[in-house]
Image (cartoon, one colour):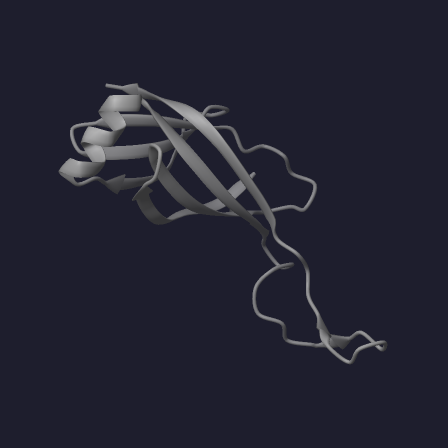
Length: 117
């Protein structure tokens, strides 16, 4: 289950690109099915599983024009798990090189169609 979703950046590359940070509750949870919806000037991310609103962002006119031209968004997601990622309170050194060890984050990139309401 998704704990929180935060939109960190919206930019224009080939099409509209949205960077999202997703915090999951459990490490074995795979229930993240985003859907993108656009109404007036707001781009919303909703769960396709249970239809809950996860996050939204207001777009400027240049971003709206780019979205209207392609009708799709490149979604770049950085996954974290509550209690496993974030600030290290206890450093576990790697004996071979003496550096701190931390968990890797999972990243994901996809292109999704946008539903205009």
